[in-house]
Image (tube, rainbow, N blue to C red; front, side):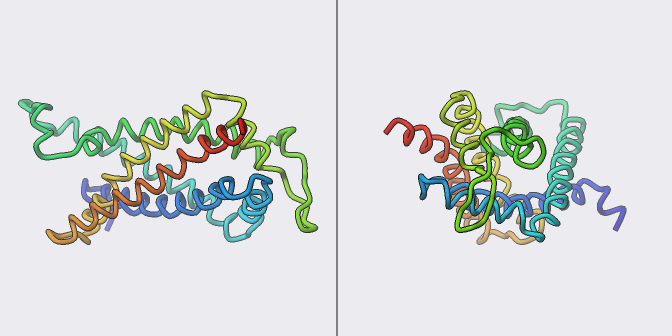
Length: 229
């Protein structure tokens, strides 16, 4: 087992598993964030955010999630370096377009953009909500329950800081391209793909990437437009 995990295919296997795990998290995270789109009072989003921050299961999953991110990034770096060193000397980039998509050839660059987006997201929202606090997080009472006003923090940043909107849009686009390739590739690495399922998994990757990327991109756009009405 140790020999398998240290091999190139073993690293791809672990990266695929961690990637599918992170995909589940993104769907949950998008579901919570999308509450902003359906309730301008902020109650729906605050209740969802409060549930996520107080639920004991979520608290257990959070460190596992962090480990998943670290493993995914670590193996992506290792595999990229390995591929660079094992690439043939006569390799020509212009020939790649005939056998691979743009996203598959730029997964590492897309990953770097997503990592930068994630760092900004954590610094502006997660870190403030979890650790340092913020004036906008003053408690509100919803149906008799006291909770932080996460809605005020998130929407205020989107309304007042245009560069955060740009970061989210760029991050969402990069995430969409990254997911489009990685979803079917992960299933292929895990041995769940063949000639028939390759097309179906490719379609699945396209649909999921559009939903997740489109959802995350829509939130700052919606908040910005709603603030002007």
